[in-house]
Image (cartoon, rainbow, N blue to C red; front, side, top):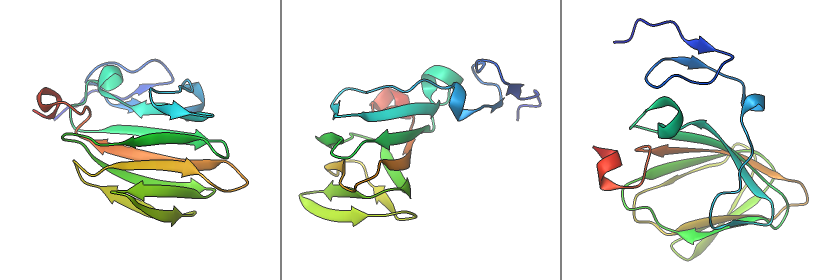
Length: 137
């Protein structure tokens, strides 16, 4: 158990508790994300050294999307904060709105598209932190 004080308002220190501000994180367009599908990494292996989870907040402009894809070992939870999105899971479409959430098991094909007139804002929590067998160990 770590007794170290959290790092506050500075870059994270690997393995140390961290108190951060989303506004300090950089928007990124990750591979296979299109049309203004942006995310900020809040908790990531590369930032904190965690092997257990990855947390991102995403902001998709209308019509922005991530291609359908699968994860070998990661499970994911999507939680919608604002807007509307069409989540495709194994070829079936599901409309998601504010406060809806979805659990995606490893191996399920999935993608999401912002389909409303306002941006889609959602959290994605993934575990383990990376989608490779070694990252899961």
